[in-house]
Amino acid sequence: MNDSAERNSIPSQRALLKAGFVLTLLGAVSGCATTTVADRSASRQAADEALSIDAGTLPFVREMDDRFQSFQIGFSHLTGGDTWKSFDAMDGKPGASVADVREPRAATDLTNRRLRNLTAALAPFYLRYSGTTANNVYFQDDDKPKLAKAPEGYKVVLTRQRWKEALEFAKAVNTQVVTSFTISEGVRDASHAWTPRMAAPWMAYTRSIGHSLYAAELYNEPNAPEYPELPKGYSEAQFASDFATFSKTMAEVAPQTKLAGPGNATLGIPGVETLLKPSPEDYANANPRPEFDIISYHFYPVLSQRCAAADSPQSIPADKAFDEEFLARPDKRLQSMKALRDSHAPGAPIWLTETGGAACGGLAWQPLFLDSFRYLDTSARLAKQGLDAIFTHALISGSNGVIDEKTFQPNASYWGAVLWRRLMGTRILDAGPVAPGLHVYAHCLRGTPGGVTLLAINMQAQAVSFDLTAPADVYALTSPDLQSNTVLLNGQLLAVQADDTLPAMKPQRMQGNQVTVAPTSINFIALPEANNPACKI
Image (tube, rainbow, N blue to C red):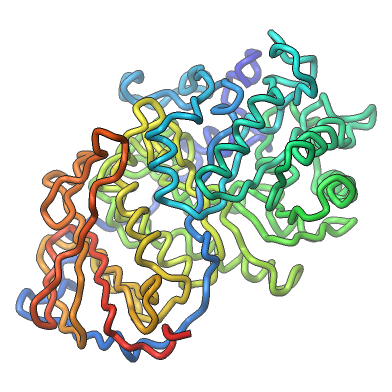
């Protein structure tokens, strides 16, 4: 999209999304009602009132995938290519075009010790290699030096060696690989139908070096292509035809790989969902009807400040990060995807294969402690409602990575992600509905039969007390400044050690059965002696 004047301008018709990120919607929606943190003061818990939770009797809700918390590494990290411009490199105003908010990046060193150590601490998970760049990859199926330029019909070159390194990284950190394939003009025939010109040799090479894919999507965001990667007017019927060819090809070259789709880009901005066409339902109902092993989709609640002013209806300012309507935006889309799954692929898992704080490269404050609340709340609320895997965009990438792509130091959400991995088991319990400003979730405690973990997200300006029925080990995450990268665990600074390993992340054993959580804090409360029958299985 950076190659011509047409593609540098904001698209005005069906091309609503660029790389999954909306620029057309600037000014398309108005009057979005929101509520500030202060507006919720009437519903806050009284300071001297303790909430009683009997963790041993919390009822079982459902079981999630052990790899529920998953991540994406964009293909540009493998090949080099465009990425989202850092906010430090911008003048504080949204870009007027895609070119204004993108900049080149070099391929990432996946052998880095710190990156591997930090990633392994989050495993096991599904690792998705995809993103917009994956739509136009030329797989160089030889061992010669990398081509200086991609052939016509492609934009970037993926060498055998680089793909091998990506697969070896995934294996070393205990992840299973998910990807998507090239769909640009380079793999299309004279009628613009998709062919396995890249996919077949790519999978043959993958097999030849002893690797495989767990799952694959045909391509990244079929309703948000970069023109001219697809012919304008590309329809759901063409998608269905292409997916039929893709399914046949994968049955031959990678029969063990599960097929996911449709993989639509969706947004939570009120008034926008109807503009994003074709919809997931349109693709699923097309003829020949696609057969998905996994129902997949993408979701972002807002646009980042790269593409919309923070105080516009399309984005969100930092002082509304705890807004209940904003935090609940993922719910509606998941419910629609559950309905689609039930009608088209009963029993299939539902994967959110790309998500984050905002489309267009992430929120300005996404690396900071302030976003840890949204990060964990989104995972917990969707797991409880029926999501099977959530792929955060990204593991490393600009302002939306849980690990900084330049320094490989943890961003603030990383520490919450580690505690989620260690403490939140696959069996989900019902801790009741969330209350404004105080969201409490419950899972079986990982690795401890009968044990329970409470995740108490306190977004209020006052402390909250819990009366529990069992001794508690508390992991309390706080920060002296919500808009900083500093994270404290039980008052102690969290930082990577000199040898690139994680610090000891030990709990505080509470005396007695009452736990008080601090204002604006995230608390994992482990109850190993809860004796919950649903957690003994």
